[in-house]
Image (cartoon, rainbow, N blue to C red):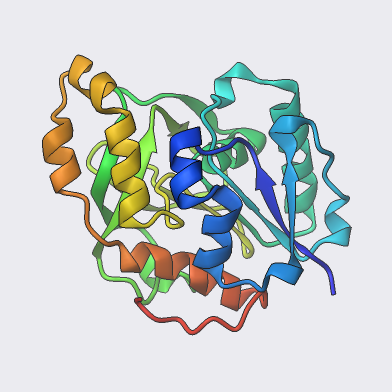
Length: 245
């Protein structure tokens, strides 16, 4: 059986990782893929990706890095993404992974106008979302966790925008029958989101936002988590029940 890759593009900050685990753990819990099926490749540490034909699909994590830095490991991963897209390999990118997928396919990534978006946000479905196999069962507006400074400013040609937030018009992109990406974090739980807000407290105050209010507004995001689980089930990675838990 071919493995499912977790393409790790960075690590959670040390205090968060020590208490809550790291990105691969969160994706495993979110997708309910059996551990023996997963292969973690830490591309940001120089690890090499296997050929796309040798894997069942991939999830691409978030990172503290910036896509616009065009780091060599990031650009190599973008090339791998293009090859995987040619094969219609199932791909699910999150945050940095979302931006890297868009960049790889010709979209434009840069800093989000107005500064960082962080906290639990309402996400609104748009366009063909009601007919998409992954989003058809979601409500028109649902909650999701966000923390990012850069964003997809111009989606790639041929992609479809399926959801937006008040600040970011490109929260969810569909690239084809098997590839999707989210700027929001379906793998986060509320405690992880609170930990990120605590960590960014001083930066948020300096930028003129209200970290206390953002912290208090953090809430569970079962519908966002459901999107990740449903993707896993649709592509045969797991037999996760498509629940809202």
